[in-house]
Length: 113
Length: 118
Image (cartoon, rainbow over all chains, first blue to last red; front, top):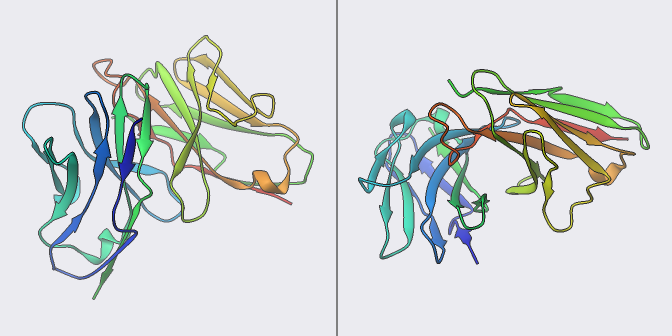
């Protein structure tokens, strides 16, 4: 079965510090991987995605993620966060075999001044 | 590009009434639309997948007679919560795929609809 695990439910960090949000997936077939951000009372906005090719993916708002097949991970990173990055972040995997997007539980990023 | 809208953004209704939520892809043709439900501080739960012109595929445990989905065109899908009850109160989010080069692997999400049933 396909599953997505976000190891941290909450990540507090100070402004301008680096941050990494962890995501691991399990799947017996090839997957596409995504990171979405959700601000309060809003829908999800696509940050970045990995479909194929280069394992380092750059997205919007200065975020990037690295696909690691051997570790089945797709961790999200940002070298310097801003207060405005405070939001809920969801990792998701899409497998053609299941034909649907499987979401992790989400990680709440709280950036403090 | 790849903008998805939802209407209404917020609705309050009395128990027993039906509520319709619209999901539109504004600048692309959505071959597939998805409906999710999100409880407070939780992840998204897929309710159903719909393809234009065909019946929706519901996830296990989702009542198809209660949550009616219509995908009449490539830009519009509707979710009707029939005979709503307080336990149906939730945040409903739609998404659509099929943007640009007909890629079906990326879903673009609407802003969500907050349903409160009194």
